[in-house]
Image (cartoon, rainbow, N blue to C red; front, side, top):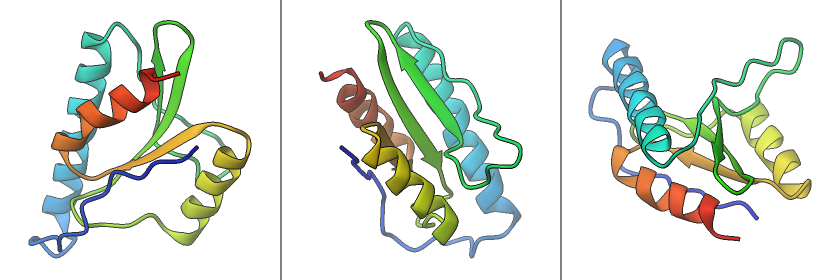
Length: 113
């Protein structure tokens, strides 16, 4: 099951340096929210296997999800989309996060059996 929580609104900063800072800020809020929920949110680094989501969300009771963090209004690159589809076919939940307001919904989805 794959659920995409993505705001389709245009990025008012045009995708420059401010977009990167916004992405980092969203990612930091995700990590903080996961910790508050009793989980961990390690950065996913896969040398030689590009396109994997940015973060694994590991929550109590064996709940796992993958989260791709994007600047507001940005979409995953084609390789990222292909990796998301591969993980979804394997039965994992994959989310695209581009707004801090989506974090609660994503965590709720991951915690739902």
